Image (cartoon, rainbow, N blue to C red; front, side, top):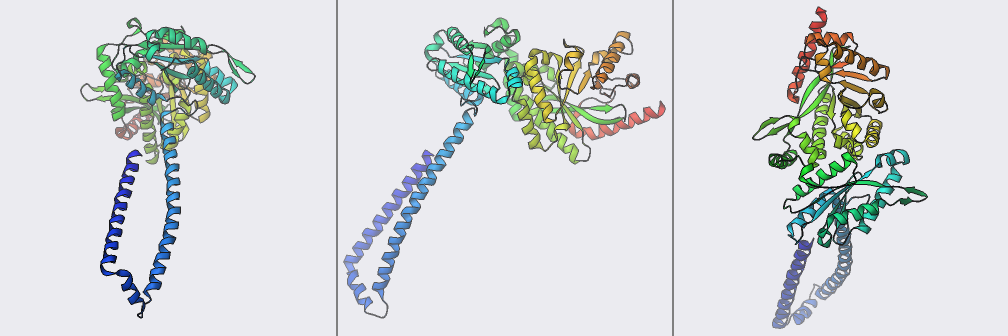
Length: 521
């Protein structure tokens, strides 16, 4: 904006100088040839030059008047555009609900604070509201939003001088301590948490607020490392519900190689190096492939194709899981749309991490991705684990409830390996249970495994749930699951996870194989 205004001033100045020079030149010519007398002589001839001069002078006066009006109009348009650009710039950096800085602007503030090289390094505090999912579920979104605004106002009012406050997403907030507050960041953090835990008055409603928080301080030169340390402390606080946790190496399982991998993973997500491979899921009643599970892979430029176990925990621990999940969902929905356009629609299942399941903004984000991709919600299934649900049951129930209202399918992956009972999971809005492969692979040789699989299938059907058996690696297992009235199966006997381009051929081969085995049965 400043450069444009300076350029306009230069142009106006140049044009003014040109007009002044031309006017002086015209004056000199007029004196030299006595231009007025010449015009008088011409006016006595057949051409009424004096009338033309009057008309031209009058028209120029009109042009000056209308030009002035147009200039004023352009100034008003310029001011409106400047206000609009300022508003867009503000929206790009601030959270619309609370007015605080958003995650990107907060990261830039952390970067700037470290670059300033102050006498005492900055400190970083991540805060999460306990029980916010219950507020959202029982009192509604409006009350929950009012609570977030009240917390934001209280943080802003109580934060020490020089602190930067941000809303990082959902009910997570960040505070960057600089200046005098960094002398004893632990005391500054405890002061903020104490202030937050005072009851919040929303009209006639008084709400008690409890929080958990993670604090990290320098000396650190890399902003990503400082945020990672705060996130490690924050994750420990959420896991153990211990209020404030200060980062220490004792709670950090990170090593140098993983730190390098973290930087590479961040670049990989941005550069589109993540790939989805798909494993078919077959309906036992029809013998048709009706869905696929999308399994993420990382095409590392030096290490080759990496499986999820090499980087998913890393993404969760460093806060990259949201960007990674976005990349996976975008690719899965694009492939789903391509299959539908090709005349073979398939349900696509994508795994959700525990961190994603705690993100109250996830349902709205998934809705936007579905809309952008032109995919019906029922074509997407999100898989969760028992462990992820049990980390924060109230928040998980609220996120799952909103996803189900959206029309997205929900399934519990690896059932039987966690701590939740089938009775508890029946309270969640899920439609599918996926029996863990360890039970399925052992059911032909271990009577206990077969009993477990049979019991899960029977109880799930009684609860109106669909059952998918993972780890089917033989025709005998297929026959046994068919006899037990399992609904769907997947496993290496049907086919492994492959790129999207190879899927049509695999689907055809799987269905042909099942037809042949059914004919022999």
